[in-house]
Image (cartoon, rainbow, N blue to C red):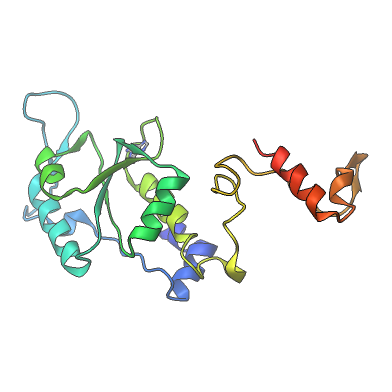
Length: 205
Ligand code: 6GU
């Protein structure tokens, strides 16, 4: 399910330029079970299945060998909420990340206790798997990597940036100055830089 996403324009270009590298690891490939089983029923009963420790330990340990300094981040709705501030911190602090995607009801707690450094959620709702959440992380972090987005796009004045007080960005307009009777605010047309700056500041939400 990562294929389409990774082949999408920005991430594909960034990977093509060698600015970012994304590797997918299938936990089933690490299962010692002959049917490549990776889950089992929960101790104590209850619905759903739980990822067993063996394939996860082997997979994470193998990936950690290749990326020893990377934190292991478990994508779970129980985790700390992802914000732009958090995205910036991760992109500055680390050059590599190991993202662990759960499924079913969860993963054996011993994996979390022994190998997971951080637990991150992308919002207060439940997805059927961590893959979509991991893709959200990859997209948000990748676009901050220098050279990932064309023409050194500035992140300084975008929505949730520090400069805009972590607020939502001001409205944008382009030509024509009038469309179907709807006019672009006069102040943006007069080229008065200080006034434009003031208008933009006042129109952040
Ligand atoms: Cl990280 N995983 C899942 N399964 N659901 C979520 C989530 C993550 N963040 C919000 N909902």
